[in-house]
Amino acid sequence: MTGRIRRNLLAALAPGRPVAEDVLCPLCGRPIPPSQHDEHHLRPKSEGGRETTTLHRICHRQIHALFTERELADAYFTIDALLAHPELAKFLRWVKRKPDDFFERTRKSARLRARS
Image (cartoon, rainbow, N blue to C red; front, side, top):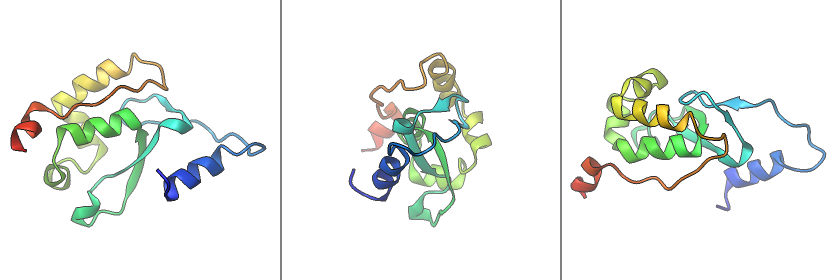
């Protein structure tokens, strides 16, 4: 990761800089440590989306493990729509019990693996 996001993250962590107020993940509701910030395009960039929201890295990866870009663009382009999906809701109930900086490898859903 050598792009703009990494530079911004490193600038935010620079010594002497005031600590920003905790950002809460709109999906799991836990505070997001700076090392776990991920920006999610609510409507995928490939579908013309520009608006982003900050999520936990593990929550962001789970979204992309469950949904295709087309599904995200057509049906799951809001936080409320994502929260209403049963598989994502099951994951969020599980991850809410984990520490804020918890991260684990995310696996594609069987449905998406079958499409490949």
